[in-house]
Image (cartoon, rainbow, N blue to C red; front, side, top):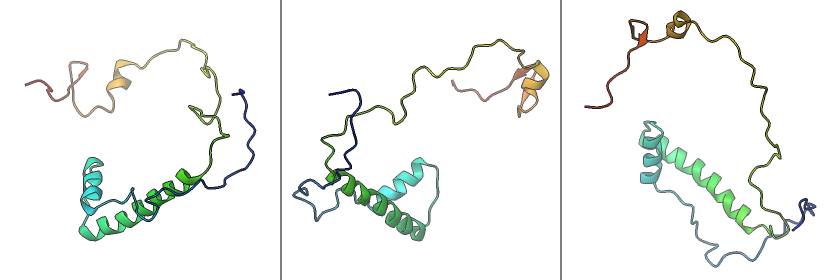
Length: 119
């Protein structure tokens, strides 16, 4: 393939999948509650049903995307082609200990106090 592929604008859907009538992306209320739990969100049953509808609408759009003919589209790892977009590594003054500790909830003897993670 060439490095640059011309976008022909061809978005003709491919043949629909055999299970086109089914929604492989459908989410159960239990799955919505699980996702909410992972996101540390606490939803009522009514909110979960509403979110289920929103999620299903979003995921239904993937059926449209899956049906598009992308044979002429070159795979890419990122939508913007930047190469080594780094700033200059310029040394500058760091924070003073007072400024570094200014917003810490707990400090002692110039150190940040955190809860123990090893029992």
